[in-house]
Amino acid sequence: MDDISLSHIFLVCADEGSFSAAGRKLNLSRSSVGKTVARLEDMLGVRLFHRSTRHQALTEEGKIYYEHARRAHNELDRARQIFASGHRSPSGILRVTAPMSLGRSCIGPLLLDFTSRFSDLKLVLSLNDRPVDLIDEGFDLAIRVGATINTTGIAGRKLSTQAMRLYASPSYLGARGTPKSCGEFDQHQILAYGRGRTLRWRFAGVGGQALQDVEGMSQAQFDDLDLLANATAQGFGIASLPTWLAHPRALRGELVPLKAFNLKPYDISALWPQSHFMPPKVRYAIDHLVQALPGLLTDDLKGH
Image 1 (cartoon, rainbow, N blue to C red):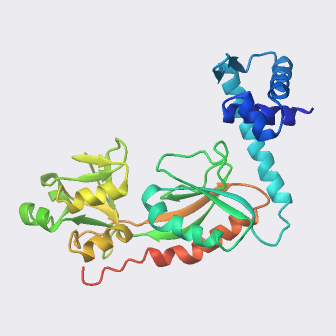
Image 2 (image 1 turned 30 degrees about the horizontal axis):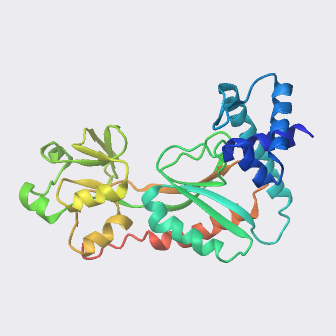
């Protein structure tokens, strides 16, 4: 049995949590799985699992080997997909990560529509706002807002632009007044998106004026845009929100855009591991998002 086969059985054991479960998944006996792992341990000269009658867990050496083996197998899977994909249409599993709010409202529905067109294509969508290592975590595609594309080993393409605007609730503005200049923000309750970072709003220059940044500390921070929008609508302060997210609340009269301020928009980009060959499932998905996403992000603020 070659090294790749040995490491594959090891990975299944680690993922399934026991030799018995791995055997069922691989259609092998428990003893056969155990002997294979023992052989791998002999080859490496380390113990990969702590074993007991009721428990099985990776050793520190096992955890290190798991990381490298998983990365190697992800690359092999990607290579197989590339060379098996002289096929005409997308197939396999499309693993995508996207921001939570944008993913729920826009990316998820668009990718579900896309994958439904191909019987051999399945979607695995992970929504989170944390930094993601596409290669180590096995993602085919990442959708990010304001992401830098010139990252080593990562290719990218702009999908659309996300317009931003300051909003507050009618009750908040009635009680605290409407700011007319950046210098008035220190007299207001500011809500922000982020994790412990200093607030930074970038105002686009209007009428030849230069780009202006406003930095400071917010009274409250949220790592979920929906929570931020809800807190703003409930009158807790002023926040910078994507217009596609705030617009429905503005239509219901829950939010009021502060028209005196022009925020710099953010690019929405697709990022993927750089390669000489792009699997059809990734290429087709990106093309679909380029075509369909802008229609969901229209900055329709007429009358608001």
